[in-house]
Image 1 (tube, one colour):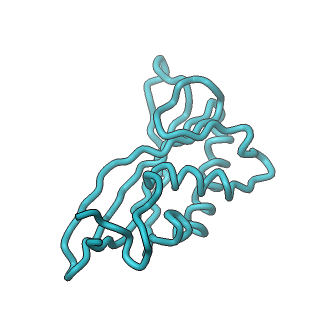
Image 2 (cartoon, rainbow, N blue to C red):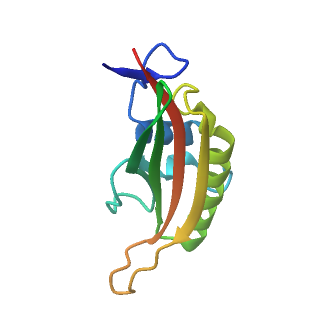
Image 3 (cartoon, one colour):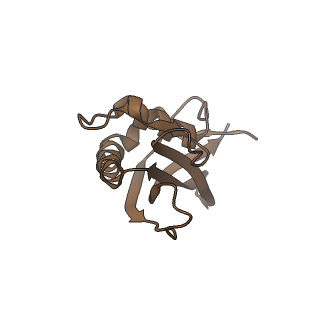
Amino acid sequence: MPLIVAGKAADFSTDTNIQIKDEITDNWSNAKISSADIKFGTTWFDAQGANQVHIVPQSIAIQPLGNQWEFKDIHDIHIFSTSRNNLFLMEQTLTKVLLENYTAIGSEGIQWGLVSGPRYLPEPKHRQRAYHSVMTIELYYNKVDT
């Protein structure tokens, strides 16, 4: 039987990693670095722009909860920039956007979320093309049988 988001008439219309990306781009607000200066995606750094943010699914844990299923949907948000200052500005803005807007992800089907990070991921100087940090967002929601 197909599952739908609890309290809704249907399941999510797109993957949650795309919904996270859309929520970030729709609510980005930073006077020092605009969303037009950032490549947002769901893959990995590709050197096609100095500033990039990629939302990558990490795992989904599903467990029964009475007549529902509880989902713990974890995504890594990779932040890349050729400028350490821009990396910091992007981290600040992402934290603000995610903390203020995570319940809007999935047409308000998310019950709650947890944001952690950013954590800086250094690379050896000879391999470094960009500064890199990662944040993690955990989304919790329930689904029911139709």
